[in-house]
Image 1 (cartoon, rainbow, N blue to C red):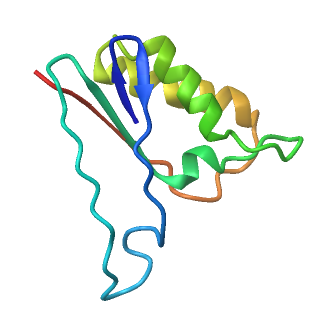
Image 2: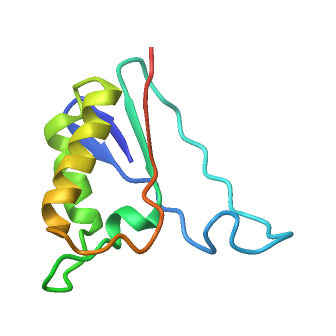
Image 3: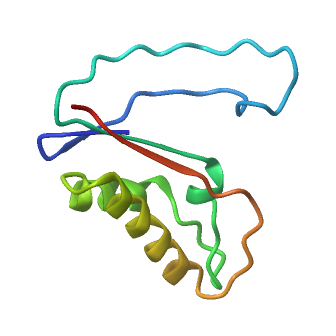
Length: 106
């Protein structure tokens, strides 16, 4: 996801997760960043995290969080994701990796 001027751009990427299968070719998506953009990469373990009701965290929650915090520092955004995710899961076990990379374009 790319946060730009209060809006979130969601390039569409589909297919097999990176690293799941050997010798796999992946679709490339090109996009032009601009100074001030925030770029968020995250693993599927973030949006697939369940809570005690077996609801998943979802892409929609990530989108709302990025809209709210996208103007802040990468560390603040990453911390906000994990803080909200931990509150959402409310003690439910983590069953997949949860990786986040946040970049600010200068």
